[in-house]
Amino acid sequence: MKAVTLGPAGTYSHRAARAVADDVEFRESVSAIVAAVADGEYERGVVPIENSIEGSVTETLDALSDNDVSVTQEIVTPIRHALLAQSRNFSIVASHSQALAQCRTYLEAEYPDVALEAVASTARGVERARNDPAVAGIGHPDNAGDDLEIVAEDIQDRQSNATRFFVVAPPSERSDAGGKSSVVVYPNANYPGLLLELLEAFAERNINLSRIESRPSGDRLGDYLFHIDFEAGLYEERAQEALADVEAIAEKGWVRRLGSYDTRHVLY
Image (cartoon, rainbow, N blue to C red; front, side, top):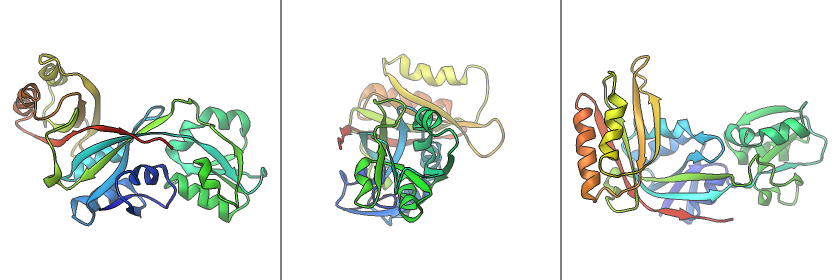
């Protein structure tokens, strides 16, 4: 099986993807990864969906709304950030925007005068550090190799830092079996009590919502769609009944069932 994820090699996404496939290739953005799976170029894509410190990855939410794909697995992996550089004399710290945010307290305390540069991935920041002695990168300690110094380890603001990744697949791979499910709901409506009605469809059937996010639809200002994760499989009668109610509420819009899946914990 061939999978695609955020590159270059050495990103946390790459680490998660290796649990899915031995053959892993790379793209520079989440939207490009999801689109490549939707187009049938790859059998699987691995994309970050949520971090325990910084919350949801909005680019992933938008890509799941814009492309017809399924979610077949959730991978949870701990995030260990280290500061990597050729020496301790650097003036720039380059990394993914999420990694920079996850290390904000450490960077403000230890390097208040250093410039922060957001790049496409943690591995891209480490690559910058390899090529420029004025740059430090943030990445897993293993990414230091033989040519970078580990200036500091475990610099994330919280030691419990972890990221959830979704394994996306073509829509034909969607499963109704699993302990969790994800849907995207576009009601194409706006009236008092709309969100309450959506929530009640699950609450009345004792289905726990583990996450709900609103995102702009992109069609007009003030128009939203909802990403919902809930703790039940689509095969369950209660889930089917809840989604029937949701589809009735969203009769002017649409509901995309991304699928049911189980969670896999990958430790490094």
